[in-house]
Image (cartoon, rainbow, N blue to C red):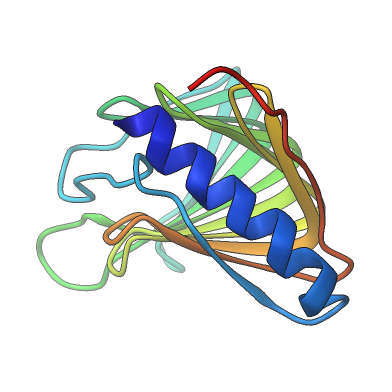
Length: 164
């Protein structure tokens, strides 16, 4: 069922890519939904904390894990939510950012993860892969709550026809 849904989504991306040209494009990522209320674990080679601004910068081999979702980067700046809960409001990842779930992978030069609204905003040489299928563009915004994405800026796709 997931393969059929993924194939339909990628086929739709192929057809719309020609029509969308350099304009934005809506993509359905049926398998790419996520519970954003899960704890976020961050590991890295070093950490700098600024209590006054409510930020922390993790550097070197950074790995961010939330449930089955993983993000790796050269550095990640974490902004903590205001108030008593001290939760994470936003992560900004830089330097060869890779985002992986059980069924998809995405990469870009920079990724902003807004934990509160469950969105990932990729920029710079963005590539999304689902099995043998690939979709690329200049920018991509993934909504982890409803499993949709918008890809903008010279959208390109490769669809691998396969067995049903």
